[in-house]
Amino acid sequence: MDEHSKLTRRESLVAAGGLVAAALLPAAAEAGSGPAAVSSGVVSCVLSPELTQGPYYVPGEKLRRNITEGKPGRPLELRLSVVDTSTCKPIKGAAVDIWHADAGGVYSGAIAGNAGTNFLRGVQRTDAAGLVVFKTIYPGWYQGRAVHIHVMVHVGGNIVHTGQFFFSDTLTDAVYRRAPYSARPNRDTRNAADAIYRNGGSRSLLKPKASGTGYVAAIAMGVHRS
Image (tube, rainbow, N blue to C red; front, side, top):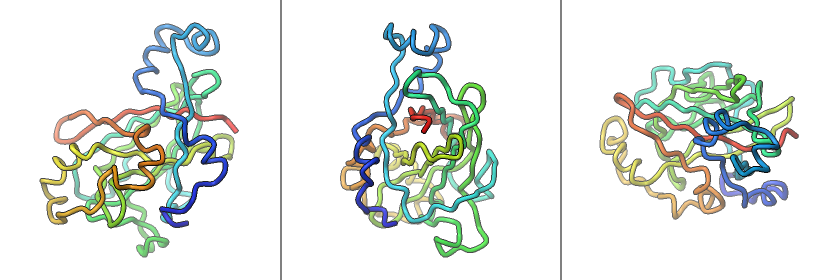
């Protein structure tokens, strides 16, 4: 599938949805969750925007937290939560699958021309709070695309969300001034020029916070269970 392929009908129907702010989860824990909290207005949940899978998905990846495999780059911790849009409750046991390019803009996997590799891709299952944590690096860029990370969520053997996370151009500019990213100047596509970003990417924009030599980013994905 080409990165710029048309969305499916299902993807189009939910593309207008947004991402649940990660800050809602602690609030829900303190003030209650579920239908009562939703009806009272304490918390609100909306669908995550469905964005194209892209050409480099590899099924059956390893269950693991650290996906760097020694690849150089600015450390990035991703704290991803999965919640049910109907109840705002966390979903335990969901499989969260992520993959992205290295600092040189290269994907692992045979489909990407790197047979026998699986750097910067992996799967984890959500805990009782609906949370998974990945240790990775800030992704590199490649021609024709804004900087992004792919994500897929499976619940009960069904794919319930396929999306992409993005970063502000200001942050990417700052990260790319340093090695190893600085070895590849002149990235050619910023968010506003990316067709996929324009179709809902602003609602899946990560807002990393500085942590040590790297960053931590948290976001929640609102999904239907089937």
